[in-house]
Image (cartoon, rainbow, N blue to C red; front, side, top):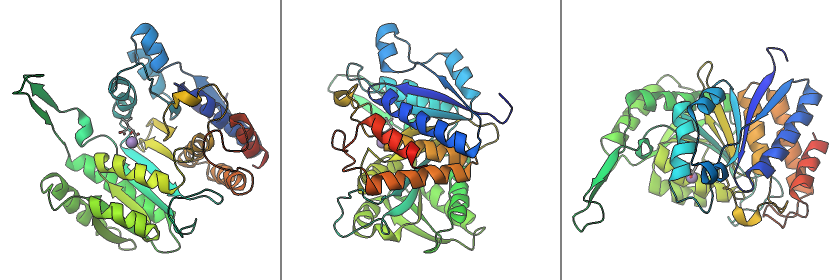
Length: 357
Ligand code: IPM
Ligand code: MN
């Protein structure tokens, strides 16, 4: 293996996670052959299953080992027998924080042949990107409770915003918007709630306006988050790139995800853009226990995540090749994007993308 080898850590995780990452790896290997990219894949056994057996979520050694990869391909973490919060906080959020993956990149693109619940809207109308801050806000775990389980219980959950965290995300979003170079015009929309969250989102708005001055080629706009939810349904074609806070980004990207065809296709990247940074790419769907082991889950989202990985690693033509192949498969082969209704099995969908590279 040379220094140029693209080394990818694969964390299949729980439920259908390993099934979809297997298809993503299959496609990566195939595109690597065509584009002459040397690749190495290393599997990590991390997730709810192991946690149930051993009580271990992730060890310091595993974190140290993962940190050495510039890319992690994640399937899903989540197990019906593990109480909510444990795996989310000590696995997924732990990795996002430990590796300082401060950008959560969530492209929202309706592919040909994919159904959207929006009447009268097609692939030309639903094509935007959400840049979600990924390390601050309500997610830091700041807060606590007193007198738990009594009538006098007091609970706080504090949203934390730093100038540094805000600025690096906004700056990255401006750069991304410039590179994306939307033929319909470059526009970055800040989504927040400055009318109520005057301290935290005041910081976001002031930072946004300051940084915007350095990007005169990009039009800017501001939406309150509640209004954004209405516009996104009514006029999705308005958006080019959205930049937003962690919590609001979480919520609006589920709405956006369903507009682009749902969890079978939506993917996200948890990106540390700094030199030597470790990033993690994942399908947005969960572990889907009821479909596990049946070879019926849709692997397109995981393959989308793999295309994003290639793009961020600088393999633009390989990434575009994968995206084109996905488009052929959704546009002219698959019957539906829902698990069990695709007209093909999970492995067949992966094969089809591979054959169309
Ligand atoms: C997501 C998920 C996570 C989040 C959960 C599982 C912690 O909903 O990736 O959007 O809230 O970020
Ligand atoms: Mn979410």
